[in-house]
Length: 247
Ligand code: ADP
Ligand code: MG
Image (cartoon, rainbow, N blue to C red):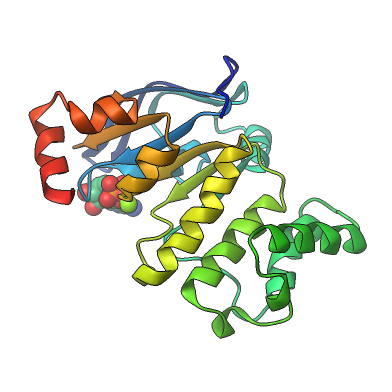
């Protein structure tokens, strides 16, 4: 799995507050194209907020975020451009319950991208095949298992042809037997060279797929390393404590 030296995401000295609460502190992070980064850390450490800042679901107040060379500012054109390159997958799948699986996948391409319907359907079927549920296309989300719904959510993101995928605990709401099918989908994406930032506590996935693991605590990046070193030789006492609790 190749990592290029082209920068996909560049975050410099980024800070964010919720009111007076300083939630992200001096975040510096450069992600090269093709990198697969796992972000872990205790609950409340700011992982989701960091991920959400990258596609402007949350606003940061200080420092800079650049995605594919576009500076994330209050300029709506830039925000649109960044969102069109960044796909996102959440813990709760956020599928539209009243639309079929196929319609969930074609809605944004047709209405946001103005893709002709026939082409949008072909693309959707291509990605539903990729996540191994083309036979569910005409069902509604409520008729699918959690694991299947999450794979639809991934397929739906892919239909927008993102260059970067952000995952925020995509398996933590799933029953254990469904976790593997979602991780397998993510592994396949990684093998195809997708640039990925994944908040997850699936450490087996981190070891297998990540080229870098980042540990966050109290709004800061405390430590980062390649998986082998990260797990076998954590430097910070906070990382050591965290790993001792989850491994
Ligand atoms: P994590 O994903 O690591 O569990 P979050 O990024 O969700 O952490 O949250 C980091 C901190 O910010 C937590 O203390 C949380 O309570 C707080 N927080 C998150 N979202 C908001 C919000 N919209 N308003 C105020 N505080 C928030
Ligand atoms: Mg979170």
